Amino acid sequence: MKTLYTQTVAGLKFLLVMTVLAGIGYPLGVWAVTRIPGLASRAEGSVVVRDGQAAGSSLIGIDPVPKDPAHDPYFRTRPSALSKDPLGPGDPSASGASNKGAANPDLLALVKQRQDLIAKREGVAVARIPPDAVTASASGLDPQISPAYARLQTPRVARENRLPQDLVRALVADNTTGRGLGVLGDPGVNVLQLNLAVATARR
Image 1 (tube, rainbow, N blue to C red):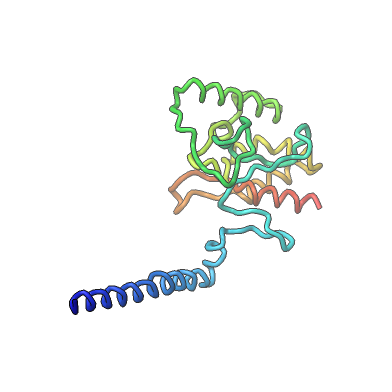
Image 2: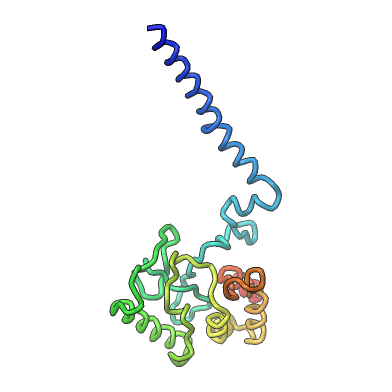
């Protein structure tokens, strides 16, 4: 009986100590680290603030929805595999790929549909459309597009925002990032940052 009592007390003490350490100490420690200058923004979701209001996240691609699809003033993101429509918009609360192989007939038909829609929207030949414009990423929430896709959209964005094409091309260049460490990945253009730059230039 004494042994059972001793073990029970020891177990309760251990439970109390681990509750304090893992349930209180560890979360507080992690929170404190995120308050270090330079880490706070990333810890809070890398929120982009414009005019005192959250405009979105630099890490999550959200396809803007134009009021009039026939007069679309925005640069568009990559399509989402989880979207109901071929070109989106995607659901930022859901992430995932289609898991369809490159030879899947449904995927090939969807890619062809996206090509036709983008060719009509941008007024270009299908051959000019880059791969990332018609293929969804693994997450479906990529914040970046290729410089080629951004350049393809430049004439439309310039026209609908009544801005010179040279200015919009310069904004694309300003918002294009290089390869990581100079060799990793491909250059990309953050769509949210670019659309905000266009909105600022339009003022």
